[in-house]
Length: 351
Image (tube, rainbow, N blue to C red; front, side, top):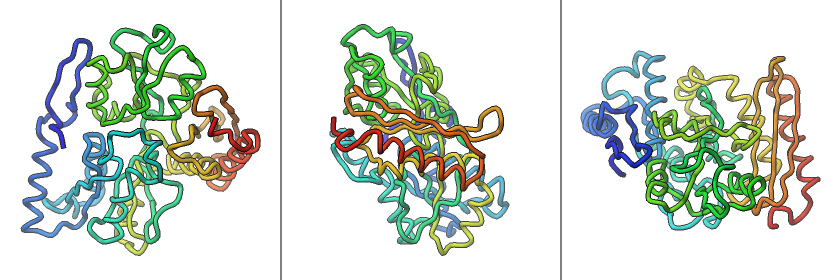
């Protein structure tokens, strides 16, 4: 795992995780927790990936648990366990080429089922629409900004990039929407790595621009790197983008009770609507799909969904409005997915 708190200054932006700086505090905290765990059994073990963003989300979860439950605020009560996933291990190929689901969750879920950890903290957009047996996901933390950020050293927006410019993104959702609106641009799909790695590649001229989730940049306190923010109309976000999900074993009532106290109901409803849409489409890393549920000015749910061909030549969109209630929202997502499946027809995603 790379150094998390060093500041690296590039010509036009800086890569850092200064929210922890407090520099070295993630590593120091982990070291303290590991030492403490040798002398005191942790009451709760949090499983997470080891990237700076994943750790930021794990520490956010830890802090909320400590604030809500005095027994968890005791020294050594919570331990953070770093787990390397398939998606972390294979960086030489685009996600779509690796195939399969749960690329960033499978090993963490296995550790949960095996009792090596007590709760698992995930970026919700990485969580497959099905959950492994013996696990539940009773908690979504309050959602961050769902929009995508445009980052470039020499252009103010996608529209300002010269013809032939290369945009780096591992996301087929972003690729298809970029090429649909700006067919003169090129997209580098194998633009993998954590936020810091991708910004470094940009600074080295590997690509002329990239898009990153604004939520992650905010959680890492790295928004000074943002050139501009894309509106929802310009770039519909991934299903569950900006949401953190926390899972536990289905028979662990104590952990379920802890997580229930942290759950943000409005976020969980929105995520459920979006994931119902994704499940209906049977989406994976190979399918460009976007979906976003939000509360409109009337207090109702506004859902917007999109599917696209990988090359961006065809984009289909739909929307639904209905009560901001679980059953209605799940049905809205399913209905929107069925409509787009019918309109897309066979072979659409392979075009």
